[in-house]
Length: 315
Ligand code: GH3
Ligand code: MG
Ligand code: MG
Ligand code: MG
Ligand code: MG
Image (cartoon, rainbow, N blue to C red):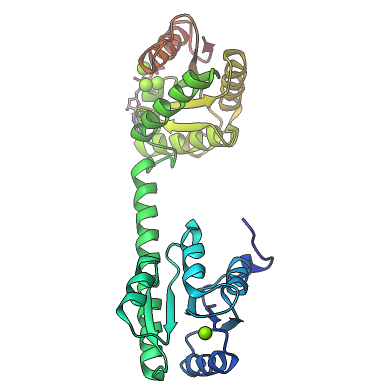
């Protein structure tokens, strides 16, 4: 996507309106009207739809006022090109039209016009309609932000901020099917803290929680961008490693084991050493042909690591 440089530094208070009309006199008038009520901090102008569309692509625009009849590219074409792009779906576009006829308005609405102002327009009405669109856009943005926050909360473990089990299971399914389709290797590491009950019993549950959060940090620091780490159970974590063959997964697991063993957890634990045991499994491999068997293999490997004396990696 094309983005003009400097746009990233835009503050929340900046508001840009793009005025598209082939009449310079009208553009001046509109600009004068909207600037009187300080709705915007900057003004862009274009004399036809094509120039308007270019300005839209190269600037962060908050609202468009667009004429219908213009040379080169008219308002309808501008609308359909704008709405065809994902990033402009919610952009308020108010159409300025000399035609009051029903057909034009219906066609405009169908192509995504947010509202109409009929020329010659009344300054008060123009401002009122602009205000309504800005308000609706603000509410829409707010709704989007809360939805994103809700979504994040619903897939995140509150203590460790890693993904929760539910999201992990969704991602394992997705990655498993991708690996099955494309033939890549998908590895899974299950890790469990050794004698964690003793941590709780000796230092208290709160210190136990702190250890879990610190461990999550260690895991997170090891992740590549496409890996997924989740809190699988109380003190069990899972790492899902796409495009990772068994040998590579084992190396990652071994590195984690050493890092935890060398980590100073501090607090009431002071310098006391804490260790983890890890089980690793990979799809495809001889006993792994489903998500269930991938987990079973990793779980059995973890069990062997515990049986074998803990603080170790098993495949
Ligand atoms: P092992 O080496 O066999 O894994 O021994 P363990 O003591 O770690 O045994 P297990 O894995 O069964 O430990 C589970 C313990 O983890 C029991 C429970 O008190 C503790 N635990 C589970 N969830 C939490 C949590 O959210 N916070 C804290 N502080 N402790 C938790
Ligand atoms: Mg015109
Ligand atoms: Mg456990
Ligand atoms: Mg256990
Ligand atoms: Mg344990």
